[in-house]
Amino acid sequence: MHRLRNLGSISNSVSAANLKRKSLNSWAAIQDTYFSTKDTFERHRVVFTVGTSIASVATAFIGYSLRHVHDTRVDERLQSIEHAMKNHVNLQHSEIKDIVGPPGGCSIPACAATAGTALLIGYGLGWRGGSWYTTKKFRKEQMKILGQIKPRRWQMLGKVTTQDGYVLNMQRILPRGRHGNSIPVLLQHGLFMDGVTWLLLPPSQSLAFLLAENGFDVWIANTRGTKYSHQHTSFSSNSSDYWNWSWDELVAYDLPATFQYVHDQTGQKLHYVGHSQGTLVALAAFSKDQLLDKLRSAALLCPIAYVGQMTSPLAKNAAENFIAESLYKLGIFEFSLREGSVVKFLKDMCKTTSIDCSNLLTSFTGPNCCVNPSIISTFLDHEPQSTATKNMIHLSQMIREGTIAMFDYENRDENIRHYGQSTPPIYDMTRLPNDLPLFISYGGADALSDVKDVQLLLESLKDHDGDKLVVQYRNDYAHADYVMGENARKDVYEPLISFFKLQS
Picture (cartoon, rainbow, N blue to C red):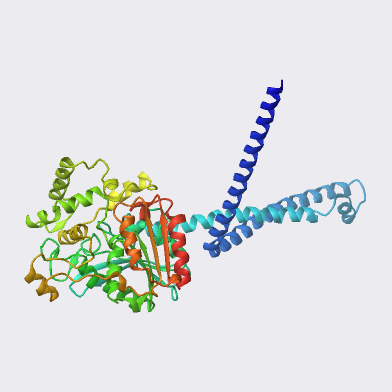
């Protein structure tokens, strides 16, 4: 009996603990719902206010119209009763109304109930309508950029011509409401990607659309050689001359051209967001004091600077086995992961090494924690994009040497001809301005932007002003999570947007 009592007391304590835990979870859920609702309303307050007002007025109008119809019918009935009663009893109209009550009367509780119901229904309809309207508008813009629908008049595309003749297309997403004074943000994608990178997620989770929702004027860049930037003023995209570039040329020509174009169009300094190779070209340019006069701040996602300790088995083996150099010698100047010769080289490498190529994305980027399979399907519809084989050689040199240097022609005379010295010049990360506002986010599972390599970069920034540097570490994030992760909005994008607002 004593044992049963003990068991009963233990059971009661466990039940109490479970009840307490559920209560706390419920309260946390209520708080999350409240703050989420508040945030949604703040971001769409104009649409919601107008929608709620219209829906409330419409609901009230319908309610009072129905009441008017009812009152009319009651009045008609009273008149018929009056007529009948006059034929039998000598009663006046006013006396009958006193007996029956006023047909159009409304007691205070009834009027309050009607008004309250109209407001609640209208508020609900306005909220749902506003949310639907906003999502629909952003989804339509997303589909335009992805090429899923053809707009009647394409207003979001701008063409930029670099000094060396490459024609780059840019997409633009204007903020709702106010355009003139909105601060521009330039988004720069990484290797094997294009501007679609920023539009793979649904509009409510995409960084590009979240920035636009928060009042920023969003510009999306497309690097030379990709789908939207496949033109040149002189060369055909099938020629070797067209593909004679590495990321040095992106630093020297593409980035300055896009910065200048956005600055000319908006008349304002811009915020910059780079992912992967998009961070490399920015760091290289900033280290040479380029573009700083047009820049407010920079956000670097999966920063690529030092890559000597990269753990990606696919990328590392390709560099160590000189795959890009072999393709270049065979006359393959466009490096496309959809092209037969490149695919054959990669398949042969997978057979002769211990690399698991059953999941190429994981083998290349690391195990992504938060990428939905449906997003992978969307990704494969648009990516991967081509790059120059020379660019792959340059990146391979960085992996093998562990340095951040310009392209090495591996010929003393060629290096002297291009650089005036026998070895390629170094991009010195210690020369980044200490007062440049930087937001850096990197992941513990990233096989391309390895933690050890990022630590080398952060060591270069040890003298950076403390209030100008924000470093975020996500232990479970890999390379693709930063642009395709379904949790990226809460984990990365919202802190990033807050950082931009502080620097605006």
